[in-house]
Image: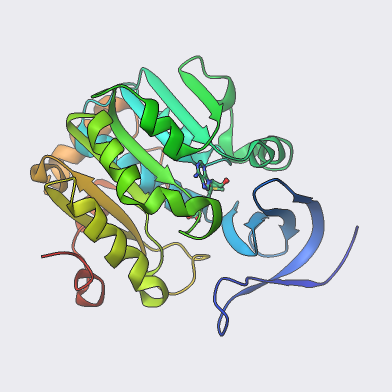
Length: 288
Ligand code: SAM
């Protein structure tokens, strides 16, 4: 269907962005959410879930690089990585770029998101779907972490929708308690925590929850153009506070050793080290 109509994001009732649509590619009501994928005139192909912009070809690199490379390079030797959500495959692709990774388990609740991403957003995941280290499971992330063995993962990356609808369970005490149990002693968890300028409670409330089960809770930022409202925050919870204070030189050396250096378009060792220096309007939402 060819149209010059606009799609308005409906994340906020009184403010938002819109995209001029070149062509609608898919519109599916799955068992979990309304899924739309369209060709925009400004940002390439775009996926929308329940009216909220999830990913665009134009700027997905910012978010995927920061959500993936920061925790894995901070850890420095992650072999077993758990990804929750991330149905477009972008996080999986970047996790598998790390030559330390031996197993990447991805648990996405909606098989339709995976199916439609494979068909209409093939550039996001690249060859990740067929990588022998990848284990893609269609299921609820909270059920998976409930059943996973103790100390079975070095890093958990939660690339979920916001805490409304199916994503809500991924922001609960039960979820974080199980994540703490299944992480190794130096393990860590990062998760999308919204745009504090508009969703401060998402960062504040979930940081307080994570603090119950992890000794070190903080956040870092990324400037994702289509997550409107300024900095996007990525929540961080771990057991070793030194992991968020690494100097850029150490990060650079690790990126060189694991094959990441020179492959990125937003992440750099200096951006990585600097991302944990939060502006006061964001830092004030973190637990003391
Ligand atoms: N980058 C986007 C953002 O920051 O909002 C998220 C992209 S990704 C498409 C979000 C995915 O989380 C969706 O595919 C959704 O189906 C998945 N999801 C939501 N709740 C989930 C749950 N309980 N278990 C597993 N996946 C879930």
